[in-house]
Amino acid sequence: MSTPQATPSRSHSIAVLPGDGVGPEVTQAALTVLDAAQRRFGFGTDRTDVPLGADHYAETGELLTEEMVGRLREHDAILFGAIGSPSVTPGILERGVILALRREMRQAINLRPVRLYPGVPTPIAGLTPERCDLVIVRENTEGAYVAQGSTVHAGTPAQVAVQESVNTWYAVERAVDFAYRLASVRRRRLTLCHKTNVLVEAGKLWTAVMDSVGQRYPEVETDYVHVDAMCMHLPVSPERFDVVVTDNLFGDIVTDLGAVLQGGLGVAASGNLNLDGSAPSMFEPIHGSAPDIAGKGWANPAGACLSLAMMLGHLGEGEAAAAVEAATGAVLAGLPALAGEQMGASTQELGERIAVLVADGTATAVDNSLMSQLARVMGPTGATDEHRLSSRLDDRDAASAPGVLS
Ligand code: IPM
Ligand code: MG
Image (cartoon, rainbow, N blue to C red; front, top):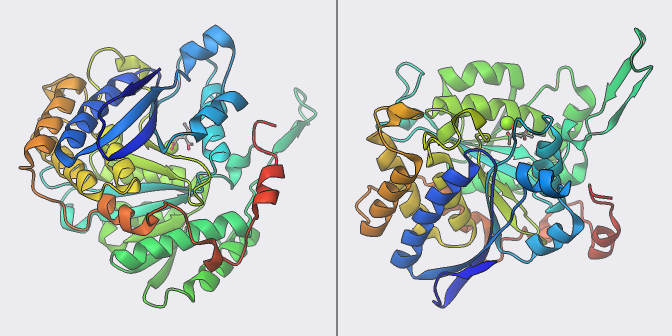
């Protein structure tokens, strides 16, 4: 069902996918913040609830269907909560919904800021907000996430498991080009994170793409760090990084570490960005469905609210994006703890506090705001200028390319 929220001149159509566990709680808090942003900045949204998740799977046996893909494509963006439930074998919903959506919607990159807001406690001794403001650009559709491989001699001592990692120039070029573009509006420093000393073939391709695309961005200084070394540098000297570009699996791992720097998984946001305008982008907190605390109001809605801020930046609502980011940071700074009962307020109460600050505009603006930079980097249509890229797929190829559902 669709709920028109207002009738102003600017309106965005949003598919809301709350999912499982704490997903609906943090999403509801984010929608309260969105209501406040709409009223203050004079835009509207048309929201459609999408029931994907464990309950829908139990009732219908369905994961992401072709029909659902078609319906989702009609929206400007997807606001996502969390997916996963103890009632479903681990991996079924994650692969059948989250990974399927990322691939079907051609969400080429997963953008994950690592930012410590002023006053927010971090487990890293001596870390200050000035030293912790970077963005990880994770390639989002390939690498080891293609789910290609095979098992032979299953159930015998001779069992063989082959799990492949796929790296195409096409996908890597899009991730790297985006990372350069983002770096060029930030502190102009881009680091490739990989494991080129062991994953030699994939490493050659990533390095060659970095060099080739880099010719168009002479103003951006580049650097290379192995992924294992990244796990050492990130907590010790995060100021070394501005934008980091990396492969899907490495990106998954290092962004959990990044989340810890900024106060924990409950605070970390992400945007799965479609760069060619062919389908909506999707914005989700990094945390999972946390079934152990579902229904208690103990989940921190900051990750969901900062994901909402990214969505607003992506939709061209840069001022609203900056306001939601500032308000979320300010509310976080006042909390006695960043998760659980010790937060001192429920998920929804925190959403309401953030909404009040968005409405009155009193939170101090954040410098170097990624959320506002997104509005510039994505351009008016949200699409990458394909002509800059050396690898292209025309519409005919795209229409005949097999999706994950086929
Ligand atoms: C994430 C998650 C997912 C991933 C899982 C749930 C499939 O860990 O968004 O980081 O591996 O990408
Ligand atoms: Mg992860």
